[in-house]
Image (cartoon, rainbow, N blue to C red):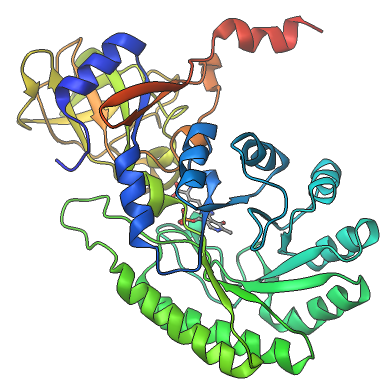
Amino acid sequence: MTIPFSPELLQDLADQHGTPLWVYDAATIRNRIAQLQSFDTVRFAQKACSNIHILRLMREQGVKVDAVSRGEILRALAAGYQAGGEPSDIVFTADVLDTDTLATVVEHRIPVNAGSIDMLHQLGMTSPGHAVWLRINPGFGHGHSNKTNTGGEHSKHGIWHTELAAALQAVSANKLKLVGLHMHIGSGVDYGHLEQVCGAMVDLVRATHAAGHDLQAISAGGGLSIPYREGEARIDTAHYFGLWDAARKQAEGIVGHGLHLELEPGRFLVAEAGVLLGRVRAVKNAGHNHFVLVDTGFNELMRPAMYGSWHGMHVQRRGQGVLPATRDSVVAGPLCESGDVFTQGDGGVVLPRPLGDAQVGDLLVIHNTGAYGASMSSNYNSRPLAAEVLVDNGQARLIRRRQTVEELLRLELEL
Ligand code: LLP
């Protein structure tokens, strides 16, 4: 079992705070940050886990932050990130600029990583001289699912690579200040693509330089995988950095001066730091399947239902710790929907797997849920958002209290 918490601690936290409950480990996050220290800037893609207290921890470790919405910008500011800075504390990355977000990036002078040429025109009209990055879709991509592949012609993301010249013209025409080029080809990528990605970045730097534009930085985007299944390979971060560093050096040869190298990971920094706790509320059989029903569903952890993602899990019992995995079980949540199953594959097919022989009252612990867990939660079935706890140096601290149903209803009743 590869989670950073003892069964006793998880039992205590579930008793104290109730379930469902998200629990994060600060030491694991610090460890992952340290593994990436060769990069000039590590910029946390906060969409993976945007709790303000997690952002504070990132900031204390010197990690910068990416925001993809006005809400994420306000979170970053609330966590103590400053507007401005060199390189900028906060970068806004998106393919569209809604009017409220445009006003916010202009007010705080937050650099915009533009995924469409229209964004450049809209920004230029309101904020001449504004700092911009260009997010380029190199024409190919990869991801752990088609839904997380952000490159190629089926992806809505980024400026298509053959449109680079037009984007650069839009930068000049709108008197914007070009900071750098950015590429993020997908999430949960296969590293076989890495040399191709680095090569594409060097080609883009060459084309940008040839068009008479200077650059200060390049960004490798995010996408670094983590081993969700036992035995899956762990990324060699030194090798990863080496390939990008070589690309940076080639690019520096082209532009004739130093270039700042950024990385923008989300999952890698937080996924393995988190677990989701649910309480077993019913067990039953249906034909060949043995169901374990818990009090947490896809409104909390959406990844299995959304991508057929695999998460390790275990059952533990008060006073007995982790139970040996002796019974093939399908683990499902409380939602009024058949797809509310944590043990499923692509297309919603249920995949029983060996787990402890669960009883009502046992704790189900779902592993590696620090990334795209709480941040993708919803209020489906009118369920309030779950609480979050951060464990640091043996101390557990509530970092988001549980939402109440009354708070949900108030949005409609207070009109
Ligand atoms: N940069 C950009 C521009 C992105 O769009 C993303 C992720 C990242 C960085 C961070 O990617 P990471 O290092 O976390 O792979 N909900 C999906 C993942 C969607 C990722 C969206 N963009 C999941 O649960 O797997």
